[in-house]
Length: 89
Image (cartoon, rainbow, N blue to C red; front, side, top):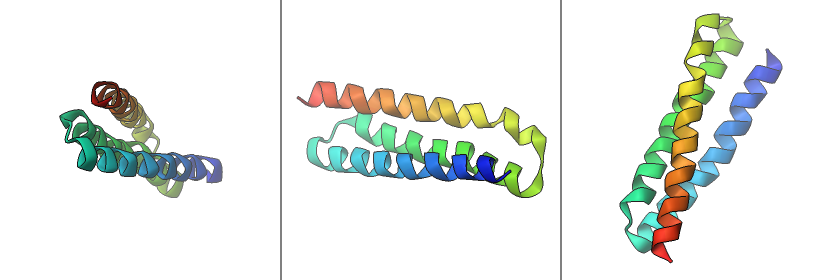
């Protein structure tokens, strides 16, 4: 369970930096894609990392089915961050 908890922490840390990058890009270029990417990084952190934390601390296995939804939010956030960067140049 420690490895599960560490995975949640690792992904939350990476995507906290991504959320800061999205916020900086939004402040600089005012592209909607950056704002939505930031929201998706936040949602992904809550769903993905949060479900892993609850799984590691309580052993509730049903939350494992929710975790991929957070991963999809992370992926969508990265796609929108890339799209916003592509359009901002």
